[in-house]
Length: 286
Image 1 (tube, one colour):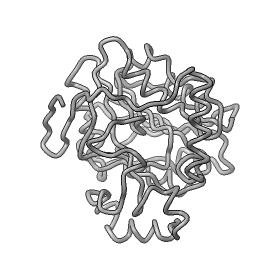
Image 2: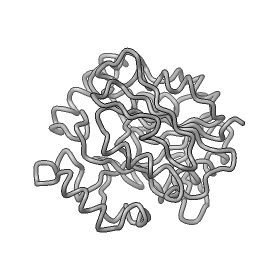
Image 3: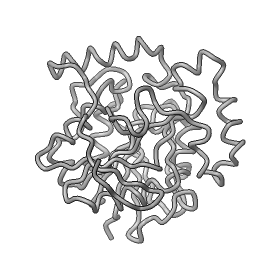
Image 4: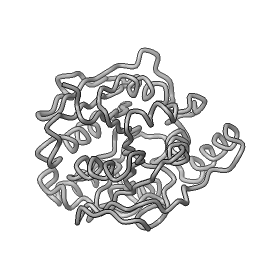
């Protein structure tokens, strides 16, 4: 039977973080998964110790690990391969496997996508810790502090409290505009239309590949942006290129690559779209 949803998750040298991300996507942490099932494809992009299928397995999910045969510093090619292998009618991309999901993310995204035949469903991005991590790592925030934070809310049992120990990514957070989403849900035919990730984004971590995909998806004919409120993804500290680099350096590199490829500056999607309020299971146009 074809799964209702496929989630493609990128992984690179994030054993600790990926384990939590997969747990966050699986029951009982993830509530009310569809009866048709959820497929998770973990695309490993050259980790020193790639996860095995046994290590990635989670009850209630159909998880398979695919080792990208030609790893590069950008996850774009690996993600595109994973997206082409997806079996679900609805497909979600998580280009950073260090981002844990809130407890109702899947349920709410699948409900929100029914609001419009050409819905682009996007969650907001949060970082674990008191500030965005490219700032907090210079103020003593590290994996030990993060582990203690998660223990303080008894995660995963206390997964409803992730917002209490997190902060919005820089320039993001409800009700502001989105420049990207690290859990982007669309129907299969819209993924075919958007052409997946742009392969010219070859810088470490993918640069602006994820914002570029989001911008292009929202610009598809008849597309309807639906923002999730009350559910989100939460970035764990790891050796990633963007979130944990010097903020100015990472941003400058990202912006320059985007401008070179697209011949225009990177800017958020200003279309207010619709809001799916996961707390009340209601949708409204802004």
